[in-house]
Image (cartoon, rainbow, N blue to C red; front, side, top):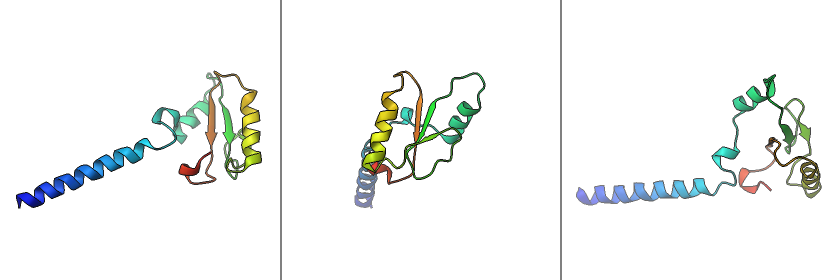
Length: 106
C-alpha cells in the first residue's frame, strides 16, 4: 500500500509541475490580459481616457475598435505595426482577436 501512495504522490507532483511549466509558456502574462468586464468598465467610463482598441480577428465587435484584420496574415500584421507606430508609447492599447489558436499568435 505504501508503494502505491508513493507512486501516486510522484505522479501528482509530475502533473503539477507539468501544468506549471505549461502555464508559463503562454505568450502573455496575467497583467497583460484583461477581462471583458474590465474592458466594458473602461469603455463606459466618462472620466478615464479611452484606450486604443484594435481588432486583429476576423470580425470587429467592440464599438469604436479599429479592425486591422487577422494578424496571422502578413499584410494585416503590417497594418497593425503601422497603426501602432503612430501611437504614443504611454497610451493604453487593447488588442483582441480570435483568428487563430493562442499558441500561434503572431
